[in-house]
Length: 300
Ligand code: PDD
Image (cartoon, rainbow, N blue to C red):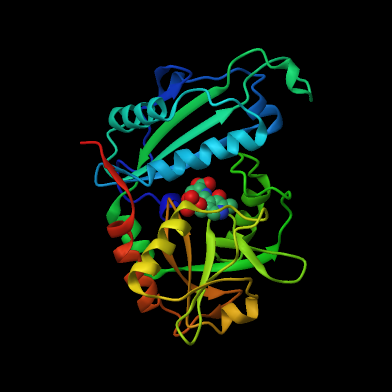
């Protein structure tokens, strides 16, 4: 996927990291050895796209961050406006015109304790940004990706965007070992839930867009939400319902959505080509139109 395969010299370079109120050089940025994010995955995060010097859908990302923190009973470490300032300054210091900005908040640090009362510090806040070349991303989207399905081994609250990403990491590695760039998680009935780090979509033979409902079993993706706005604008029909691998394999088109890959065509599912095995035309249209509806806060 585009963020895994840097194509430009600038790709993937982070110069400065925001840690708890200060901007540190990348090599010198540190957090506590007993941070609960490290020991318990007791942390949440957001990834926002940076597009032509603008942060995309920042309000929605920060609202979801606040919700994730609330679900875990972690206090908001700063106001939304302060988060905006941190995101902006991190992007500026890292000279990112196109790429991503990553924001993570953990409950804090203290002697290891399953109970929260061991926490001795305020929440740990980390923010970093890195470039992704537009050329590389578009070249990836022109090819599309293969997906591989597998059982969902994650917990029951995937609606909370925690850093508990080991099952997703293992799933994506195992997909990659079979030549696929994304894993699709299946529930016990064989329905597709979502990808390892993206939401899953198909387009039916009669041009309806289908994506699984945003239950506690999946993340309500911001790209998914903004794409739903676009579908309304375009007069396209949305069905939020489960679909199986078999339905996906017989779909007209398929794609995934995420802040780092936007609308990314899926060209095969478990080795079976979707449509003619090339990115679908409606998917490409939606990818091209996405930024017309997304919120953009211009930074430079
Ligand atoms: N992943 N589902 C999962 C499990 C995800 O990890 C993500 C995002 C999404 C899409 O959400 P959004 O459209 O808000 O990016 C769905 C991010 C990009 C990541 O972990 O890198």
